[in-house]
Image (tube, rainbow, N blue to C red; front, side, top):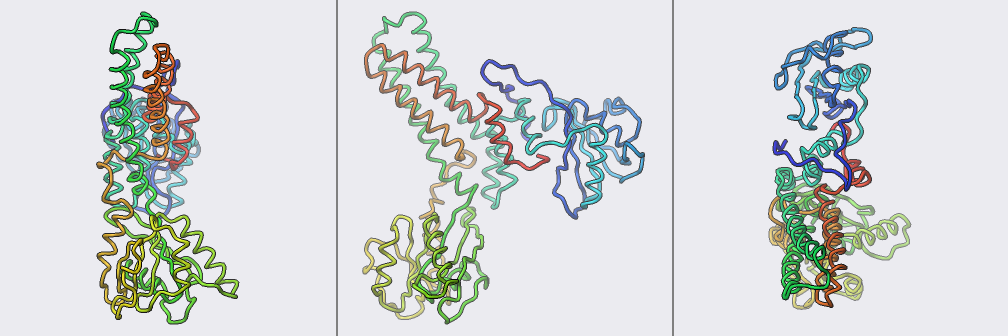
Amino acid sequence: MNSRRHRAPSAPGEAPPAPGDTIAALATAAGPAGIAVVRISGSGAWAVAARVVAPRSGGEAFAGNAGRCRHVRLHDPLTAEVLDDGVMLVFRAPRSYTGEDVVELQGHGGGVAARRLLEAVLAAGARLAEPGEFTRRAFLNGRLDLTQAEAVLDLIQARTDRAAQAARARLDGRLGADIHRLYDSLTAICADIEALLDFSEDDVPEGFMEETARRLGLLLEAVRARVATWHAGHLLREGALVVISGRPNAGKSSLLNALLGCDRAIVSEIPGTTRDAIEESISLDGIPVRLVDTAGLRKTDCAIEAEGVARAGTLVARADLNLHLLDGSRPLDAEDHRHLEALSPARTLLVLGKADLPPRIAPAALPSWACVPVSARTGKGLEDLRRTLGERLGVDQAAPMGSEISTRHRRELEQAADAIAASVDLLAGPPDGLVLAALRLREAALALGRITGRVWSEELLDAVFSRFCVGK
């Protein structure tokens, strides 16, 4: 956990919140495991733990033991029944994950043992934590800014090494530092405008409007550059949806198996074997990719196959990229051209399958399409396909590690950019536009502040932390 501290955030006009009650939750996944950890946080954490470690003893038993671990016997505080032997870790506020007094009790893993330990802690006076409440308290106590808090969830949910590395860089504060710099630059400009307005609205120094517009223009470029990192963040967090489409027997299932390196889909000479979508995940240069094989595109009287074809069309419409497979061993016909007319070249990569056979389709016959010849049987062209797939998804355009923004960040940055652009336009007009420009810049500052949590509301925190699991 990042040890650097941040100024405790607060909503406009409000003092930082007082420490809450004492909460507890299982911090490890349920089920068979070597250990289970129950985390307790709050002003009463030591007293609660004392009732579990040694029934009827007081919290003062822990004084001076912060930062050390102790072997303890864990009890039910109501019956004094011995539940387990374990380890107790004590953290003194503010040098803990939440910034509060924290105790972690480690017992044996397993559904029953972990549940009984948690129930004992709750019986000792703690309240069951809400989803993300430990990290929420870390934010409220200034241990993390909001981008770092979100990075905790990204790290937990990372599906590739690259996604985990990017989340760890954001947890170190890389993205937050970038946003803080934008915020500080904007507030400096706002301060200059406000100072002038406090002095005189009618006597604007020569060149002030032009110089302020220039400074805002540079800031606007920086904000829009940050918006451009959303695609990389989207790929790392959500992954890319890549759909394999094409006519029956074009080789879609064989291509799926070749890309996966295993026989995941049934391959048959009988047309229409695949009637439902088959999905698997692969990592492409550290980007998680959902690869989906679909039913062959054709008209059919079979209700089940027709439903599969309809689902294939829905998936193609949703895909980040569609790998449309053509049988390269036979010429194109009217049905092939009809399918191609329904596809977008910008979101489609044509794969000319069965490249181990004599080619009957020349790439020159498809001038407006990107084409990659591939043989699933021999592996010819697979590396070219993977490279081209990465290029089309924008993997090579990924942002610097740790600076990738989320959809929430993009929304706030776009709002800030719109307000800054409007301010630049107002400064190009008559001097009385300075007042309106100042108002728009305040809107931009609020939007940037909401990204890191310099400005926050309960609704914003609820939206961010409701996505977390209980115990984090």
